[in-house]
Length: 174
Image (cartoon, rainbow, N blue to C red; front, side):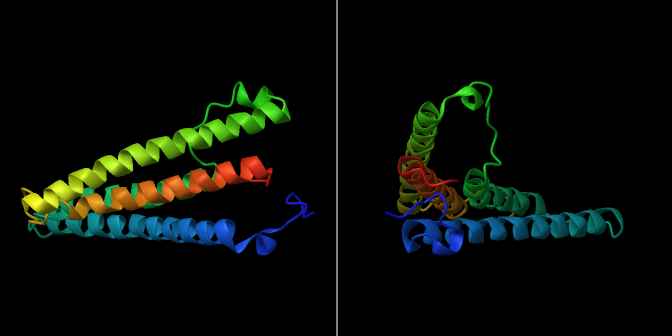
């Protein structure tokens, strides 16, 4: 029998561990790159507004869309790394068996949250697409387009929590 505790990342099963981990890390890198894009956009907008008296009308709206994308792509990576907000006052005191159950329940809760939000946004996207609605503002864009990163983020969050659940059941270190 394979001892999963001694198994390194390179020896992890291709599915689900390595594929999901690679996908989530890649989206985390995209999220990080978006921080730089947003920073550059803010610098350009401030420079144009205060030095050239020629503000970008669409900049704030675009930054809002990019921030949603950044958060949705980065949330699964934060969960994977354990960088999310957690209150471990009681869970740190649990015996190993109970800690495993607590991790499993926490991952199931995240999966339920991601499924509810993802399906909800999917309904909103299909409605907006069928209705043909466009955003109000300087960037006229179909309203379903900025909502797509939320569905992608929730799918990544669901997969990451499912992997955490799988690992807690199989006792694979996280």
